Amino acid sequence: MNNLLQFIYLITAFILIVGLRQMSSPKTAKHGITIAGVGMLGAIIITFFSPQIHGFSNYAIMIIAIALGTFIGWYSGNKVQMISMPQMIALYNGMGGGAAGAIAVIELLNHHELTFAMSTLSILGAIIGTISFSGSIIAFAKLQDLMKRVVILPKHQAINMILLVSSLVLGALLLFMPKATFLMIPFFALLLLLGITFTIPIGGANMPIVISLFNAMTGLAVGFNGFALHNYALIIAGTVVGASGTLLTQLMAKAMNKSVSSILFSPLSATTQQVEEDNGGSLKPIEQSDAAVMMAYSKKVIIVPGYGMAVAQAQHKIWELAQQLEQKGVTVKFAIHPVAGRMPGHMNVLLAEAGVPYDKLFDLEEINAEFSNTDTVLVIGANDVVNPSAKTHPESPIYGMPILDVNHAQNILVIKRGQGKGFSGVENSLFTLDNTRMLYGDGQEVVNKLVQSVKGL
Image 1 (cartoon, one colour):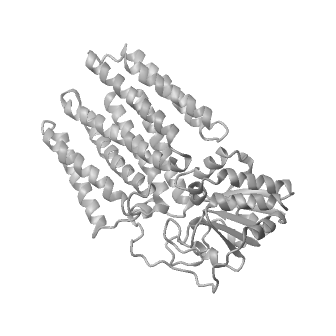
Image 2 (tube, helix red, strand yellow):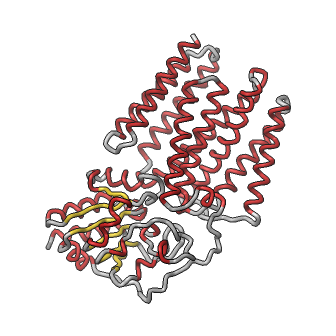
Image 3 (cartoon, one colour):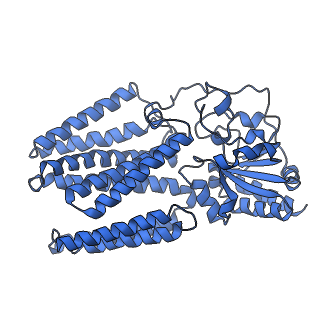
């Protein structure tokens, strides 16, 4: 019976991998999510037939947990708007890490059933999963603006190191003294605290990378628990998530021209003096009607979206504006920076939701060379990813990060709610260039006025 269950687990894991593979393309992502969901549903159903599970109380607990999880997932999935999806992902990822930590607790309490190797894997799963849990909660709080973006304690890295070493010592004691279960309380308490102190000094601009890292950690924790439980589905799913999350973390760090270690262990100081590029310019506002004329009589317009577009929920109006411009013979493209928004692919998802064709979305490498022969660039809600200081000012905290070369365009229009700084707190020298004009106001309202103005031309 057990061999049959493991074989079915293998099938469900294969279905999950097929679903994940289809998620790699926007055209098949929706279908891939459905396939992956079917695979996970199959794994849940087959678990009821496991010989290790017996007794009415166990089945009742499982049914109640599934019912609660299904309701919460369905309700939040329908209630949460697309703008809050990064926070939701951070929170759900944290739940995965917490689940891995909880599984490790049960395994360690049943130490008499574990070999030394299985106990070691359980300890590793507990360490990684618990840190991912509390760290992801902090990431959620930051993205939701529930806490200060950067909190740096005195001797912060030393505190992290003390917490890590202390946790490892307690983990080793639990490994060699399995009956000392009273050590589990300080063990998990230190890990939860480490996840918090590890995350609070990291700035908002780096938060997508941190979320990706925690996702990889959760996958590894699940994989370790899978080895300890001899569950092929957990082993395969955890390994796939851990590997893909690690690769994504590295790719995102590369997109910012940074190493993962520099992002995690050399965060921006809360008192870092920001560098402003002195180009002798000033912020120059423009009326919506004049901006509409500028775009309508351009040969090519490139639209650069950022998190501000998500906040204003202006993606539908942006696509309407693009369609109006195309009707007047203007070539319109969308430039997507790899770390625009609060998570990988955030802008792609929002624009796809609005109906923007995939062939109009271009990443940094594909479109950067086109800015120099573009008549007008419209920047909506983007800030740090178009800041020329990343290339011109070595003292700038974002120096070295690849940017969209918006400043090379003939004309630049920037839609912005106010004159504040970006999420990383760095002044943007793009806004004071001679060829830049500012459109102040709510993104959706401003774009709607641009649409009406273009229609009237």
